[in-house]
Image: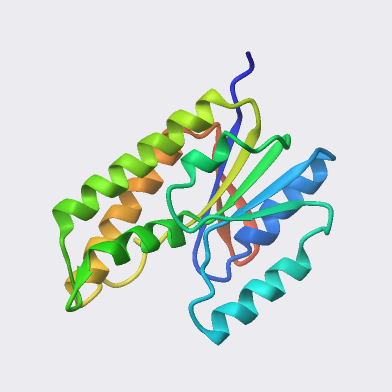
Length: 182
């Protein structure tokens, strides 16, 4: 059995991660499933989701899975899977452990570790190629509140685990892909 190939695309907000991922997938000429982790929790996010949906080829399958994506991966039959994005996936996990703007970090840590480790294990058991998108959030200021710091720390941990497993890591800067690992 062939192991899947993993490409991790990191970058800041609006750095061109999603469009670069889509162009990589289109260049393969293979069947593609777009796995979206965003949730339309307000009108602005609904509009963004609709805009992104309209920018993707209509023949691509789209699955909207806000949490625990590993279990859904086993049902995907396409050759290429774009997972967009880890940033929102970890945020969706975070929101389960927030009470009065404070995060139960111990529980959140366990959930993130479990989700990321399951995701990596399932991906490695698949034969598809995976293009995974995540924000690099560790380049800015230290968030002034506990929830932001905990989120940044554990998203950074998740990105490190995925980068370690990835065959290729690309950092997007102003729409320009910079190869970090190949």
